[in-house]
Amino acid sequence: MYRPEPTDWSQTFSDKDKIPYGSELLYKLLTDVFPNQKITDSKVPFYSRGVEKPYPGKSNYLYVYQVFRTDSIGLNRLMNYVSSGNQAFIAAEGFEKLGDSLHIETDYAIMKKLTDSLSLSFSNPQLGKTAYPMTLQSAAVSFSLKDSSKVTVLGRNSAGNINFIRIPFGKGFFYLHSVPAAFTNYYLVKGKNAEYAFRALSYLPVQETHWDEFVNIIHLNMKMRQIGKSRSYVSSPDYDDSPLRFIVSQPALRWAYYLSIFGLFLYVVFEAKRRQRIIPLIEAPANASLEFVETIGQLYFKSNNHKNIAGKKISHFLAFIRTKFFIRTIELDQDFRNELSIKSGVGITEIDEIFDQIDKVSVSEKLTEKELLTLNERIEGFYKNSK
Image (tube, rainbow, N blue to C red; front, side, top):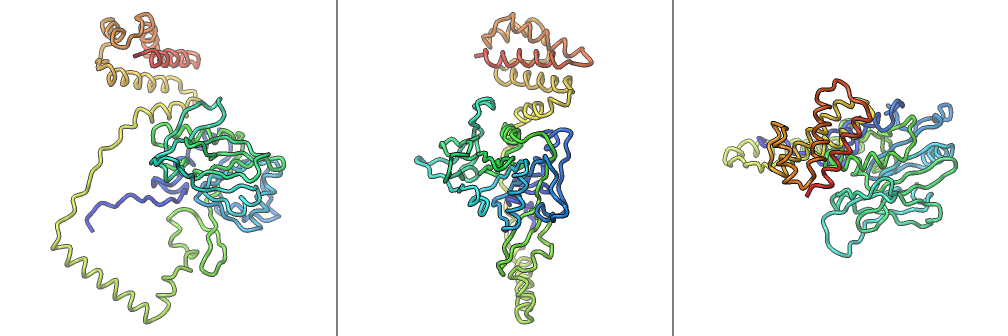
């Protein structure tokens, strides 16, 4: 009763949930991925549009959840939507009827060597060769292609299994990803994994985007119904078909249920006085602030606030010097530069160019894009050349 509320690790993938496996952060940053475009989170399921309300042309459909499940009518509507020239980006561990239509399957990867983690990377060299680490539980699902003639492989995991593909359909494309956890709050704030999510979404054209916040569930009567992803929908009438509904509908079972709850309450009240409070384990917080600053700076580069971005870049650079070379950065005078040159192995000429540029940035009210790029190139050159 007195312990702190534990972290909710439920995988909702909802844009309304701040829990680790919600997608609130991704949804809020979609305006940065698709600038000046309308981002919709409809109050009704995406497939509820009738013939009288056709889908808008030239748009993206974005869906993130454990399983992509829909009925035949919904599947036909999605197929027509993509065939008309739109794009569908679906991240899920299972695709059911859609997988049958596109001749793809998903399965858990079989590791030749036991490991507790996997990393994801892109096949396109223009997106870099960076490997983005994830837990084995989150990243083990991969694609098994029945017909690979029309499939373009966009990404793999460190075991060599395919996890990101593109399939043309009519005038549009399906972008399918087998690791939905990569787009959740937990991984978007963990190191550089935010970069992976946004580079994956960069395959979609910059146009109006529809976020689907609804999922299809199958009740005990085998009927399919659409509900919201968020935990806030638990009190919705859509959940009335649960086994508890039958219990409270029968007088004998209802009173047995109430008496059990009351008895459990009495036990907790009196038994809690006889036990010592459990001492919670406090884990040391991970210091991911530097990586987070760098990631956010890259995401907001197009906001043209170059002075602010340069300030964050300089702060990150000075923190790096303090951490790696144990040099105080209060006074950036010539003695400081000479000491940094000796410890880092970088020539004094290059050191002077970097800090002359930093001094220039510090006194400037505004900063041009060219000046920001120059500063970034010199700092990155220092990272590369320092020992």
